[in-house]
Length: 408
Image (cartoon, rainbow, N blue to C red):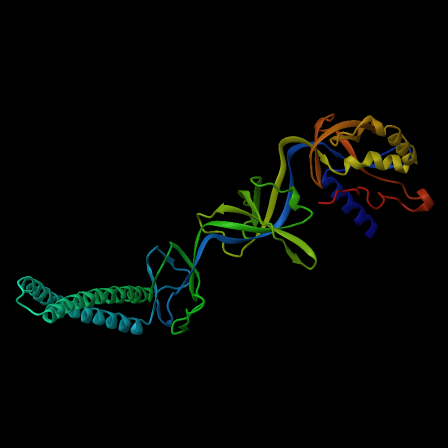
């Protein structure tokens, strides 16, 4: 009963797959499948994760206690919006001190300008009196010295005023830096700093928040060194996600990073492409199954990839491998073989007949037939020898040959 149930299950599976077994004259049964019309892609697959294309780490340029944070993770912010505030006490004190010093210098300048005006008037009077020989040389020199001294003091005060004004502008800027505004519009995605924390910006600007524009995401994929040379900038790529496996997102490869990452002695290269995310359904660090499309056809005649190897396998089983190698050696000078030329076995009158065909796009599961075959024709994809053959053991396809159903 168990054997009967197993036989019925195997038969049901074969019917479901569309495969058939046809008995050959030598007792060998052939597993067949019909050529069908369909779409086919040759792709390289990889796993990917999402990162925002545009983001910025918002830090502080001044040290102090983080007195207040006005936003939370997940909030949407606009460019220029107030995000956080550093305790401004010491910066207000510096600005007030600078302004007071500046006022003092301006007062001194006013005083010196008045002294300069008086010294100039006295110097001019002494100059006239000297011409009239109505004053001493000493009085004239004293007036001249006083005039030049006040002139130099005024220049010195003006230089001090410029220096204090420069320092004041720096102090006012630092005071402004205590109020941290959003440099771009986006979403707050992380907050490393906490309210009340003391931040030290003397060597490295501490990061308070990260803002990201989630409307466009970058998919970071890791491609093995065996496949990276197949990729080309600009080629089509699509992906699916675990949450929406039936939906495809499309994009174009725009960057392959030159420096690989080695994980457990496996060399992996990062390949990047962007995808619009207007509805926000793609989140940071989500996983994606990515497909880099090398070739694609629609409404093509398709056969299982196993059919391409059956004719050669049949020759080997009949002891023709040696003769086949000799034939290849004799024809080695005839030029390179067309990589798209192939031979398949097509069922005619219940028997398999070799037929040359031209193939197109291929992957590990299916192959496109460009010429030599029509849709609906049966092709051989495997064989099974009867029990008792070769020592009484049932023989299927040997290791490395196509089995009854192709690997998918």
